[in-house]
Length: 92
Image (tube, rainbow, N blue to C red; front, side, top):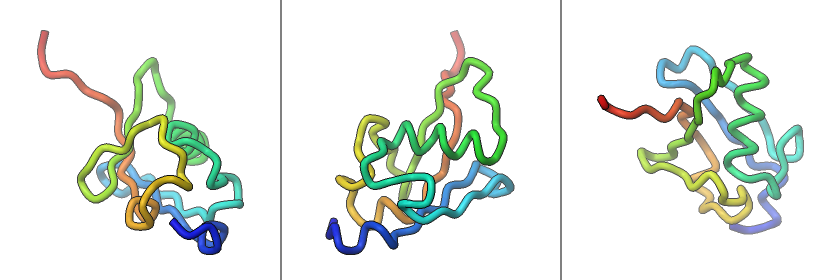
């Protein structure tokens, strides 16, 4: 990712339904130095979704993002739109 374009990059985060949507530019609350997990926390706080003890994950282009990845290290295509959802497990 070109560092010259990072400050103007925008990330759109939404839930599965698209109802709880947040659009933000980097360096306006989130910075390129934040991790994916910190961005998820930022999103949950801004759209007022409670964690209720759940872990959340983000997907970009259908692929789960590593929660420890730094935003600046993600490919450009993976900093455009994320779907944020709680981790789920099927059955016990």
